[in-house]
Length: 366
Image 1 (cartoon, helix red, strand yellow):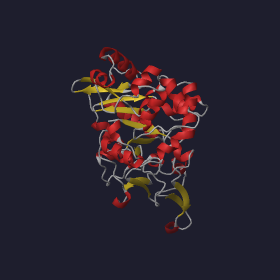
Image 2 (cartoon, one colour):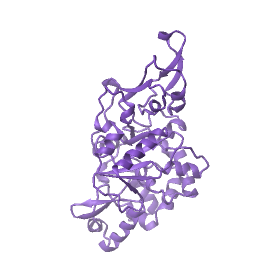
Image 3 (cartoon, helix red, strand yellow):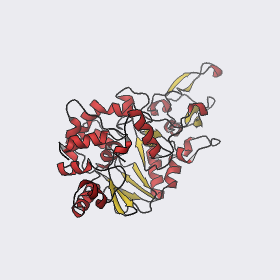
Image 4 (spheres, one colour):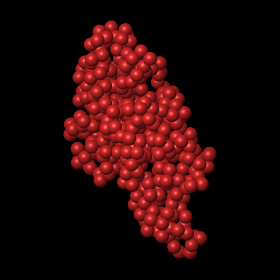
């Protein structure tokens, strides 16, 4: 395949439903050049989303299976491509840039990479956030939902963790990136979680610190107590990560604060509800809400007393404010079904919907 390998890879990544839009000054190419050698970029540009063995890749590309196997293994270790078991042995495949390649660069993140990503974010990232269905959706922790409410397994961060067979954690790439450009936030870094249906999947990983299920639950609680929003891939099945996000650092949630976009993330099936009789109008929930969905206002039913009020349009149903309330005056309740858009059942269904919205032909990359 002829041509600039970074241009070829950029076009290949932009052909995925996640997208990788170009910039006027070529920042997207410099970003790839920071991570990939020319040889690795050329190979990645020929991979598919579907896992293939080195022999199968060699059959398509004409390369030597042995040499390709060594190259692919090294690339997977650097978080540039994905690897997994197939019926015919270890297979390799293309990963989206976000969520995928970028999030696995915790060990390579430096000031240069941080600056390149920020430049890319400012120029092109917004185009990824305007497409439906959204890349991420919010899930609450069970303890923030009122006890009488039904919570489906895919709607709960705790249930998603419990249903997995392997757990791991990586440093939040977004907070590391923001710190390196001089915009650090005070939230914990070591809380971005990865999950797998395969037992012991992360035990030998060079990029993921393996956790027990109990440690994973503790990490989830620690993130919740720090005021972080739990978000996952926007499908009911196949959830493989839980991002614990904030609007001050997260590349997706920053779209609301920095780029003025309202629907950068799919909200949960829940909305906050205030018990006005219990509310003391202390304002802690208002301070904690990252989406500007809470305010203090006069309550008609209680004379001139102030209470917390909820903007149902802005509320994403994360439950962060519930944990901040000292009087248990807040709790998540299920939205009316007419307001709930169920996530696609599978990742394949999500890809198909998003590809249709973008006018992409998935046959080229699957």
